[in-house]
Image (cartoon, rainbow, N blue to C red):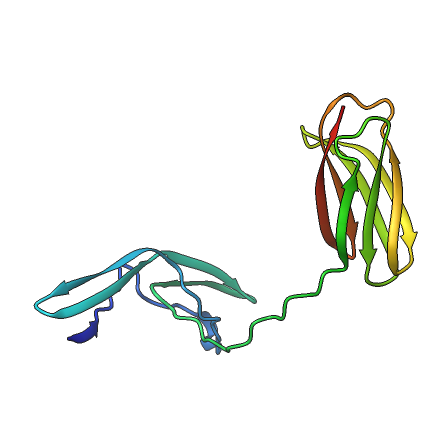
Amino acid sequence: MKKRYLPIFGIFSFTAVANAQQVELQRSVIASTGGSAEINNTIFQYTIGDVLVTAIENSPLLVTQGFQQPEVNGSIPEPQAPLITGFIVYPNPANSQTKLEFDLVMDDMVNIQLVNNAGQTVRNISLKMLAGKANYILPLAGYPSGLYYVVLKASRRTYSEKLVIQ
């Protein structure tokens, strides 16, 4: 089965650049629709692009349309190791207090938030903590019964656990 690609250039398939400047475009896919069809054992694949208007330093607009396939460089960012592990909240459900327990991989500023089910932060605590096993007792007196979330933030990473206050 043969594969052929049928480019469909729309009404404005052009590039206009003033002052004969050398312009280097970052290739990307700009398309709202496309598809493929098989006709007489031949596969046609197409993309219909959207108009892209970009301002270029001190020059008028650059208008281009269509399918611009990005280059694949093969590099995938390595996932970062978690900064906080073993995060648990107990007792859960809780009445007057609950205990937060977690392992902190390195010394860091830890932000502890108690968030109600409406998404409002009702308690916010910031602590400088040392690496290792961490324990914190969170007082719950004065909070109405319901579902809450205990949110830990450290080094721009967020960890959360549900907490039911009775």
